[in-house]
Image 1 (tube, rainbow, N blue to C red):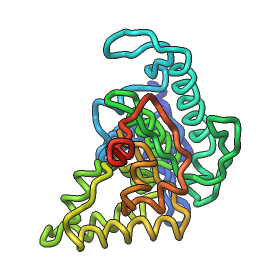
Image 2: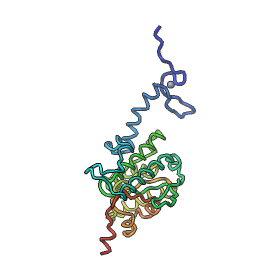
Image 3: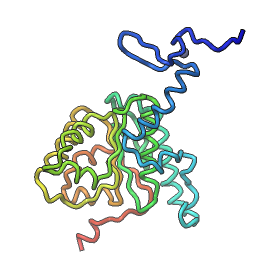
Image 4: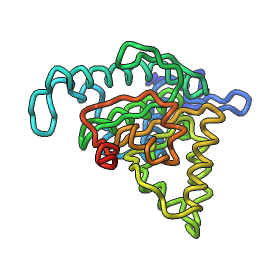
Amino acid sequence: MNEEFFCKKCNNSGRISNRSIIRYCDCVFGKKLKKPKFNVLFQKSNLPQELTKLTLEDFSVYKNHKDGKDFTKDQMAQKEYAKKVTQLYEKQIKKAILKNNIILPTFNGGKYEGNNLFFYGGESSGKTMLSVNILKNALCQFNDSLAAYYMDWSDLVTRVFPFNGEWKDILDLTRNTGILCLDSVVDGGIDSKHVEARITSIIKYRLLKNKPTIITSTYSPLSFQQTHHLLEPLINKCLKIKLNDSIDMSKQRRG
Ligand SMILES: [Zn+2]
């Protein structure tokens, strides 16, 4: 008789239900169900496809991956720090998503306590890549689409615009997701009071509940402070991670 594998835990269904909570079994059948679900989760989380394939191994601390030029000693130190913070954050991601503060080192050897990160640096400095890596980690650990959500800043600004039928859904998603990434934030103002109010409500809510947010920008934190940007209260609470020389608009404005 052909003896096929039979899993007593899930009766080969791949699912185990326990008081209405359904989880995947760790047998082959559970794994089969789990894999496509991750692809769906990645899509639901709005992560940029091309970046979900990269891992931290692809983040070079020695040379610019675009032009192949070696980094200077200072640049290498910045990259190494950014990578280290990402790894330390990922190790404590559950804690952060459960709305707790975590402790991370600052670049100058100090201590940061909180759960928000601000990555800044020029084009292709790796800021989005590191953020996406953290979001991916969150999805893998929580197995839930609400664990992480990615949003490009310009996309957010357009999608919460009045008369856009989906703005309530976007507000709901960005407020409630476990960890939110706002990518490529620019330091300019927004010419709609409604949009400003909606984004402010997202930020206020997340700060109030201590929900972690990751911001990336080509602009330095100083430029946001000087323009009293609507994200300023959140940026003030972020651990600032410089990836390379960012555009410091404040210098130009002062002149
Ligand atoms: Zn099973």
